[in-house]
Structure formats: C-alpha cells, structure tokens
Image (cartoon, rainbow, N blue to C red; front, side, top):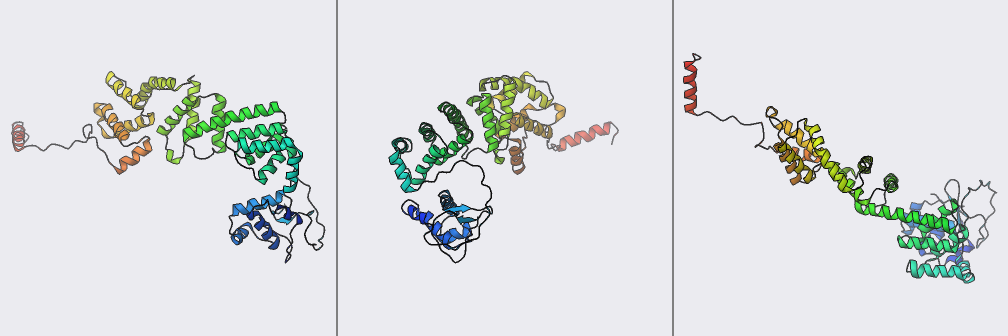
Length: 407
C-alpha cells in the first residue's frame, strides 16, 4: 500500500484533534507521519517509527474507518476529500470518482459523540456495562464501544440481538471484532429476528463444540483449514460419534505416515466404509475387523488358515497390527524363508514383534529402519551356512565312492 498526497505540505485534518485523548500513540504517530511524508510505503513508515508493519496497517485502517483517510482505486491513501483541515489547502483539479461499491452502512462516531450516545440511550449504556462486567470482565476501549454501536445502528440489529451475540462470543472466548464479523454476515443475509438469531446461534454453538472436540482429539494447535473443516462438518452432519471418529483417527495414525501430516481423507474413508457396513460404535468396528482379519490375512498370504495360523492371527488382531504391517511381514517372510517348506507365520510374527518393539507402525517406517538396521531372524531364515565335514566323514565318503567305482 502506498501513501500519495501532495508534496512539501504538512496538513492535519481538524477532526484529528478529537482523537488526541482516545487514539493510541501508534495511531497518532502514523497519521502525523503519513500527512507529513507522502508516498511512503507501510514498510518505510514502520522502519521510521520503529513499529511493526501490522501495527502500521491497523493504524491506517483506523483512520480510514474514521474517514480521515480514504483509499484510492490504486491502493494509495489520501486525506478524505470532505474533511475540514486546520489550514487551507491549495486548490486541486476536480477528480472523477468511481461509483462506490455496495456495502454495509458505515457508522463513524467520534469519542465525544460516543459519550453523548451513551448518555442519550440508557439501554445502550447498559449493554456496554453488561459487556464489561459480565461477558468480558474488563473495560471496553473506544474501538470496541464503537463496534457495538455499529452492530446496532449500522447493521440494524436490536440491542437484544447484539447482547445475545456478545454473550455467545464471551462463552467461546472470542472478542468483539469477531462478533462484528458475525453481525455483518447477519446483516448481509437479513437475519434480523430473535428467532432467526437463536437458530443461528444454536447451529454455531454445536459446530464450535464439535470442531473444538475434534481439534482436541487430533491435537490441532491451529484452526482447521477450509478443506479440513469441510470434512469435520460432513462428519457432524452424518452423525458420527466422537468415539467412532477417535477409532478412525487411531487407525489412521497406525496405517499412514503422519510425518506428511494427519490425513483427513483417510479418516473420512474409514468412517464412510464403516457407515456403509452399518457400524456405529468402536466395538462394532473392532468386531468386524476381527471377523475380516482372517479373510484379509488369507488374501495376503494366499494360504489356507489352520488352527496354529489362527492363533497367530488372533494375536496380531489383539496387538492391533494393521493390515499394511501384516502385508510387510508377509513380504519379508517370502524374501527370507524357504517357501518350499511353506509360508512361515513364525517368521511373520517375528517381524511384527520386532517392528512393535521399535515403534514402527507403517511399512515405510519399517523398511527405512531395517535398511539402517539389518535384521536376520536366523531361527527361521532359509540362508543356512553349510557345516564342514570331519576327516572321518571324508574318509568314509571316499571309501563309499570307491566301492561304487566312482573313484
């Protein structure tokens, strides 16, 4: 954003004087700097005033909201065209103004007018006091008080509805800026009655509670992305229980590489698959898994199950080994054992126990670990070193071959 106004002229809008007691030091520094030094970027202002770029941006937005500054089509900032100044300005050629974009009504209240409004309307003053003492437990600053008036006078919401909205924001520990964004949405969508607002707040409460539980379960330290939130919303709409989602979550941790991030797609796939089977609880899911385990192992190993093999399968299911890890163990058994003697479930079990011992939960982790730490299960390995013959055995073998006229 560039600042562009005149040259070698330092002017101060007279209305700035009204904010000397209410504006923050940063806001006053920025407005004075902008008016004195035109064509300065936000970064230049920040460097000169030793402020962060974010604070400069916030200060500029404040003065725009008070109609002290106005933004041009090119993103530059000018003093508002109709703002009275403390000194006379040189005449400028008239500029063609573009048609204003349709937006919500703007309400800009000076500190002195705000004080008058509170004295004039006891109900409004009572709402401010309720917000300070009950909802937020602190004194509201000038900008917060103005935002409450904007919600009421600018967006057309009754004081009762504004109070309901502030109560909701207090419960979810969000501030008045967040409340203002919701109020604007209601204004744009013509949600204006108490009944409509109650319905909307009920929906938002349920969504916030459901999403909050998911964030805690998944250990998300940030707000879900829009794509992640769409999955969460679909789970809530489908009526999946938290217990079932937790089951799908742990299955995902065991069967995917979490170094690349938690896969919401995998969790969703599990939940949809369970729903198609009519499964609604973790207990049902585990029971179905146990029934399917033998079939899945049979599919992987391509061998019939026996009572001995079933004992291994039951133990694997009880230990929570994933199908992907059983597949990995099978591939290791094929590679390292003599298949002429049949598939060694003992070798597969040794592989799985070794992986569990080293906290390897995915084939990718196991493969990488075994590359760095080669493991040979000699008890089951097909690679056996030949045992050297003794001298007596060599003598007996030569005698036998001589009798057979081979030597």
